[in-house]
Image (cartoon, rainbow, N blue to C red; front, side):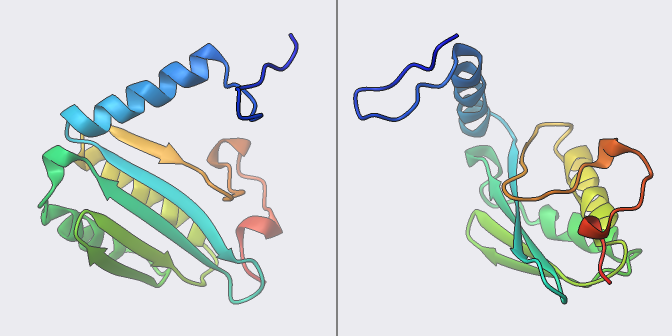
Amino acid sequence: MDAQFNPDGSIKLPGWMQQARADDANRMKVGRCLRVLKEVVRTNAPKECVMHLTLSEKMANDQLIESVYKRATSRMETPMKFERNGNDIKITVGTAFKRCQECTQLIGALKDYVAGNLILEKGNCTYDQHKGRNFSFEDHFE
């Protein structure tokens, strides 16, 4: 299959990808949904990551997100910082040996809270929870 281009010169997305984006946009408009974008901010020690959370229109003033965050992080050793600006929430994930696993656990707690209605965008995050229990220096700190 050859690449197709839009009139502006950008690559045209395949139909299934366009449909997935449209579905996600619809979920953000009509349902209780949470979008999480993971971003690695600093790759050298001390490493730092940020999760950008966007609440859907139906969750506009949901104050329980912070209590879900506090309950989940109370059992974690990774330092995390919660900042809220309207419907946008920023969680900074600091340095600790289990930061990637605990970040994934926090996302799992948020997913449980919204009954699975979570859109996860990995951004430039390299962590893959499905690669098994193999140790990787990329996912941990020296």
